[in-house]
Length: 305
Image (cartoon, rainbow, N blue to C red):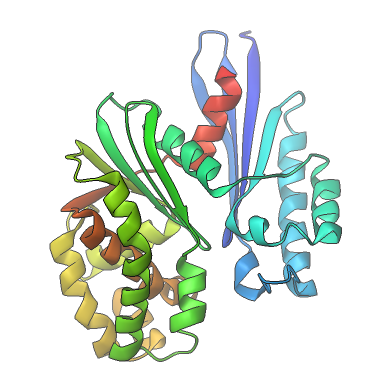
């Protein structure tokens, strides 16, 4: 029987926690053998200024981590790396919760700086792709990363503390959707994106890629409204989607229209604001969804380090 090594990546995001386990065989073949994702919504209920986490949210997070631990226990000798991203950057001072989380996992949690997160995202997206100039965007719950590079080598990286959860909290705190709310959110996001777009320059990328649940939600909504085909998000489709938000007037109506559950619809409009303004700032025509992301970057680094 072939010798098998196992590698695992745990991504503790602001909205969802993810786990993947990959088997590497003696012939070099890689196969995903386990995966889990749970909607924990850590940043939605946490006071990010103090790091205080409600007990119900702590319990939900620790239950998820216990489940991850059980999965990892099925692979003796597994090499694992566990990272926390935007929400964990804000709760670093909550030593008690971090200690509980690490005790459940029996493994340390590495809290990534924004640019380190961006580099791992780029690595994951670029794995197994051709060596061409590319632009990568990852819209998370608490932060958004932009990276450009060629092949496996990143050349410019940026991480901004704007995400679906934070935009929703600041501009769409209740059920209503108004023109004023949308205008204010767009202006604030564009203002933060402009300096990054100027630093990246007017590069002609051969590939424009995006990753995250938020991107997939936008693609799903556009597809259900027959505004795109094959899941490719276009500038034209985003322009056509914008007035629909205001016409629906409430998040409940929006959920019904695009066929999303309420939890996804809640973050659809804030994700749209970030993506739409990124299209404008970086002068994008279209973007393709990548199913590879930070977890694949972690796995690739574990295997090749």
